[in-house]
Structures are given as C-alpha cells and as structure tokens.
Length: 290
Length: 268
Image (cartoon, rainbow over all chains, first blue to last red; front, side, top):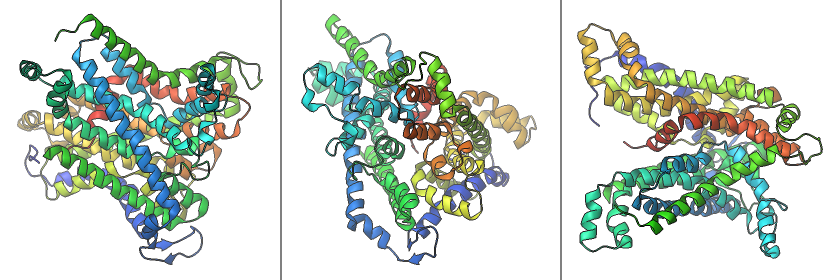
C-alpha cells in the first residue's frame, strides 16, 4: 500500500467516525454476536444453553447440513464453472472479429445481474411450471416423456435452480472477460501467428494467460453468489421438494426463524463468512502467483 | 485482425443467440403481463398493472422501497465520502488496520449478521420498524462505499489537495469544493450500485418486517406470488412493477453499473 498524499492528520479519525459507528454497530458487532450465539443451543425465546463447538461439529456430522453444503457445491458448478467456460468461449470468439453492436450486446447480457432476484425467481418458476413454456417446447418436439414440473421433481429441482444461476452469471462473466481481452496488445497475437499458432493454440498461449486476473475475479464473484443464493431458493422451492434444494444460506433462515435453532443458524452463518473469506483470499493469491 | 465473412456471420449469430438467451425470461414475463388476464378479472394489456397494483397493494410496497432506498443511498454516500476522504488523503496511526476492518464488511454475507441483528433489535423493540430495514443496509453500503471513495480520492487527489492547501483552504472546504465536484462519475456509480442493492434486497426486510405497511417491493412480490394463485398474468404484472425502477435506471446508466460491479470486486 502506497501512502496517501497529505501530511499526518489527527482529523482523519473524525472523518471516519460516523461511518465507523454505523458499520461497527450494524455489521461488526452482529458478527461478534453471531460467533457468540453459535456457541449456544437457543430457541430464541427461553434461556440458552452453552454447548461449545457442537453447532460447528454439526456442519460435518448433521446429515441435513452436510447435504445443504453438498447442494451448494453442485450450485457452484452451475454458477461458476459453467459460466466461466461459456464466457471464455464466447468472449474469445467475439474478440477475434470486430463485430458491431458489441456495446449493445454487453448491455443486454448484463441485464440479468440488475433485476431483483425475486423477479427472476417469479419468471423462472413460470418457465419451469408443469404447463409452462419449457414443457410446451418439449411437447412440441415430441419429448412429452420429459415434460414435468421441474421445480417439484426430486432429481431435477437442484439442477433447475442451478440453470437459473448459469443464466444470470454468464452475462457478468462474459462482460468481465471481454473487458480483459480488449486489453491484450495486438503484437502478442501477431507473435503467436508468426510462430504458426492456430486459433486454439493462440487461445492457450495468448488469451488465457492474459485474462488470468479476470478469471480469478469471475470465480470469486460467482462462487460467493452460489453460496448466497437465499432469495432464489426461498421463492422458487423453499428448499424442497423434501430437502433436495436446501442450501446453507436457506438453512440459516429456516433454522433461526422457522425451527427455533438459533445457535445452529448462527454457526452456519459464521461458516459461510469464513468460507467466503478463504475463497476470496485464496483465489486472488493463486491468480497473483500464477 | 481481418475476419472472413463466414466468421463474422458466425459471430453475429452467437451474439443474437446469447442475447436472446439472456433476454428470454425477462421478455417472457413482460409479454405475460400484457396478455389477457388468465385469472379471470377480465383485464388485459396495461389494465393488468392497475389490477395488480390494486390486488397486490404495490403502491404501499413501492413507497416503502423508495423511502428505504433513497435514505440508504443518501446516508451511506455521505458517510463514505467522509471516510473515503480520510483514508485516501490523510495519514494517521492505524489507518491500515481500520481500512482492512471496512474491507471485511464487503465480504461479509448478510446471512451471517441477520440472525443476531434480529434478536438484538427485538430486545431493543426495533424490529418491524423502518430503522431495522434501513440501518443494516447503510452499514453494508458504507463498507463498500469507503473502499470505493478511498480508491477514487487516492488516485485523483494529490495535486488538487496540494493546490487547495496553498490557497489556504481547510480540510473541510478542500473536500467539498475541490475534491467532490470532479468526483461526479465515481459518485454516480456508487449511487446507482447502492440504489440497486437496496431496492433488490430481500433477506433483511423478510426477517425484520412483519407489518404489511413496512414491506418493500421485492418482499411484497414474494408474498403476492405465494398467495395469489388464480393465474400468472397479474403476478407477472407485479413482477414488472417491482423490477422496472432498477431496469430503467440501468437503461440510462448501464456504463456505471457495469464498471462499478466489475471494479467493485475486491482487489487490493
């Protein structure tokens, strides 16, 4: 960190104070309280009972929670891996030829990022409904056997939620990678051409190394989004059918406000925070070193 | 780079296919909202919005959303300007540690803090009030805003600050008369991002609010979609009403949204 301009000034503390007070009271203090609550078994009403780290042990031991974290892993494939693969292919193809309308395309594919998740959930619930557009298309091409209520199907509900994630993260990742590829100096492509590289070799020799940083940012953002998919799950499936789409962020709400397991909910929240922390630092560390 | 005609055609095809994939769900909901009501109210076209407005009480929800969004934007942008100014232009003991403390807030998921916040605010008798919805979101936005404004002041300020000091301006005047005016683009980005996050926030109002009069628009839509089962048309109209404000702002200021969300990824 380079030092900021200007001389040493005590007045700086005064400028920070108002922000720090709000931030401390409503973010830092609650985080400390979350750690505190996570050490208790408490239903939110009566007296809590100190149980040490057993709420954390449950994250590994409790089958329901293990499943929820497992579902989050599946969602990461849909939210993160697929969009990065699709985005890389799309951006590198678009980057090769100058096409008009790229700015407009950017605006369009980024749109899913700005629409409220509840609105997105309502739209997709209709798409997946038993008599919705998706099944209409399947029946039209003679695949009647495949038509079903996708979000009510034990086998398909989780992938169906995942596809929604793929839909709204792909635009973000593509725009990010397009920005990164636009910064690659032309000479590098020409050097690769002179070495006789085809388009695939060029991609691995020139494009991929140049957008390492962008890929790291894309992975960080999308993995965090996959871990924090509460609104989408709440509105589309409420964790069902059964518990087939329960995810950690939904479990936090469910346990704290519906089952009266406040300590367990707090522990899951703390685990999510630590996970997001480790992922953010880890991915950036890897990107810097490579 | 020269592209052959075939390659160019293939590219346009890709653009169109992916553009359609991104737009289809959004367009489908707008189309559904404008069709004849399948719930049997007899309305159609723009009339659906009036019907949805009436049945779903969207007037109340939009008012609350607007109140929360505007106040969170104003409060968090003001606080972020002050703290970003200190971190970006002044040297004082512990500045590094304090700044990392704010960075922590950018990464902290709402899921982690909403549980203790609810129970502590309940003890204070503050749940189911406007404050319980707005203040936690001010805190979240201040974390990002401090990071954002510090980066801006740090990159732009050295010559300006020194010139202002030579002119005898104090630190307060330097901030408001010298540094803030040219910061307009950075501020617009911060404002649109905070507005979007606050407008779209779901978990905090869901947990904090029980009275119908305090529901924000996304929350109202979720309840409407749970209760209203006689068709999809009016639900779609409600979804359009809730989604539209942010989409309109995005249509005019999309550069700011894209730049902010891409640069806002934590990089130090």
